[in-house]
Length: 233
Image 1 (cartoon, rainbow, N blue to C red):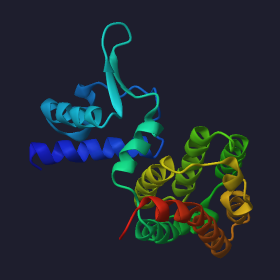
Image 2: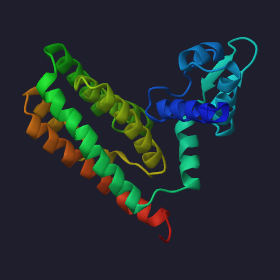
Image 3: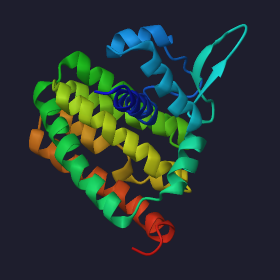
């Protein structure tokens, strides 16, 4: 890739990790030299990527004591501002929901077939952790993303895990502009017990079905909002 194209690709990848809540507010990014080695590009290319993310307001570079480059503390608010510039439409939500059912539904089914006892124990821990922070939108988004990423990890498929990262990034962008409210997230279909239970009993078909219910409930939460904010088609 040309340097500009590589810089944009790296910025998108790091932005995706931020959106998927793998990197959260206050996290320190590796030094630019390390990132250049990781991505196999020149140092200047990484610097261009950092400039893009700084311009978007997703990261900040601090000087002096504790110097480094960090994800901004209020990154979800900033993601919401960026999303407001190009609001999601009804078609966007429907398309993402279909993609979630295809990717995350398959990951759930594979997890039901493949998860070990240790993996299931960790799944229960993550489900409990998500329920415990349901009234805190930012903490819940992080816990929710982490749970779905772990289900993808349990699937044993690198491709499904990478696709799930992209899905969680998109969900964060969509949900960042949503008025929120613990009432919506407290609905049974918005929680994860039925999905986790299907994985725990090793029932792939049921796991896929329960994920579909979960994904459609998320779409129902979003649709009225995007219809109001997206404007004319």
